[in-house]
Image 1: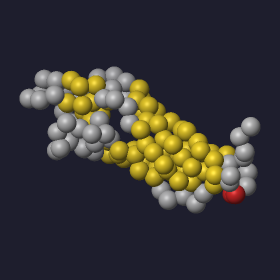
Image 2: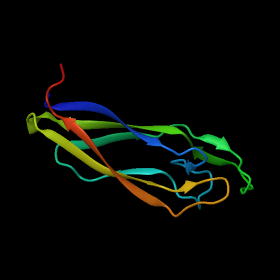
Image 3: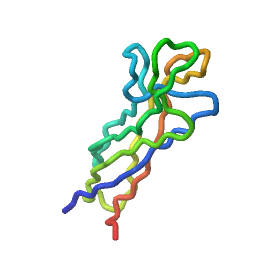
Image 4: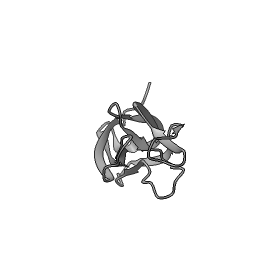
Length: 123
């Protein structure tokens, strides 16, 4: 078939002492960590799998929080159209997140990323 599946990973390196809200925060008012992608010809994002968060209670919070800390691996399954020849395909996206430490949260921000894919047939 002219369709190939590719599994890629986006790794978030979170500074010591900081954490991000999980993709599904327990509190609806918190900003989740979410990946979004630009429409790219030849690449279809099939599935994004977020890791299990750690559930913790922090000093400032009455309730438990679902958090990402340290290194977080988000897995992405892509469908790549091999008809694009052997050119390099670029999938651009951004990760939206809200960094917090034990005392304070910063404003939510977004960081762009690029995944380079070669659409050559895999052996």
